[in-house]
Length: 163
Image (cartoon, rainbow, N blue to C red; front, side, top):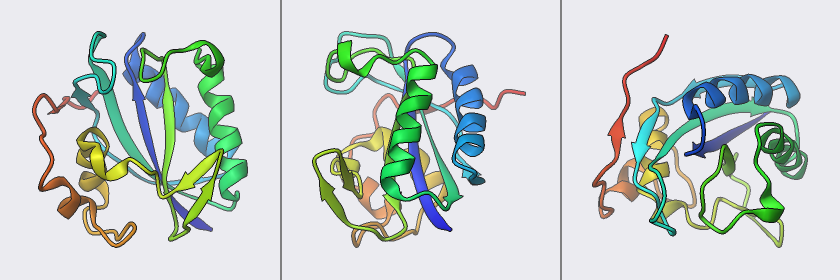
């Protein structure tokens, strides 16, 4: 079983309800075990700043799917929850975004998938929830806790837990 870190994001609809359902789908469709789930965080939009704030979170799962099969399944789940990758604008609004952040210690550079995620260490909105669940995991020689130190965290706020 591989230990996989996945980032969740969205800013359209009831994102927190979508996360709850999406995580259940991830575990069911990938035959994965949920190891950890971060809190939800409200975060300012990144890239295209003229849109609603996002909600972001991270999970850790254990799965036997290979990285490409996992990516394919995550894209199917995004589509199920209303994401249309073919017709959206880059960094624009979305119902659900699922990114593989790390897959064990695998390093991979393919057109469809780069591991670990190539922009991980630039994105506090991913590193804050990631540091909550796995602060000391080494990813490409850095830990989420250390990678967060130089980044601005303005506007990133932990949301209260929901029942």
